[in-house]
Image (cartoon, rainbow, N blue to C red; front, side, top):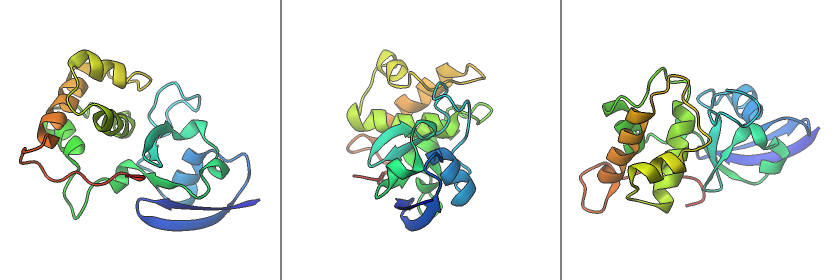
Length: 168
């Protein structure tokens, strides 16, 4: 067992983990962060995407011991005081949720994308979300949601202030 410490959604945790424990399993099974979904366990689907020190990563491709000392944001840590993050709100309003299985990963990847490119074209959104698969094939509404979020988060827009993501 190895002792690890990490901050997840603003709360500090210290725990003993087996060195082979995947971060996604640690988040879900030890810390109760079940909003992070286990999709494929092979890093192909992106359902387990989180922000690790401000960068989106697939948490099924990271060991919990590799996240020692890190600041992590899961989809559960985005809403503040009952107000959805603008990306969450845009997914809700534009039917980007589909069955919901891919949604946490799509939202986390979209936030990372919008941090790098605050006004992406449809093609740039599709490219930016590569590696995140939607089993419902609802990509059109997901792309529409990301572009709506970009507009809501643009300077001068009247959207809620985006919640900070770890590492920002």
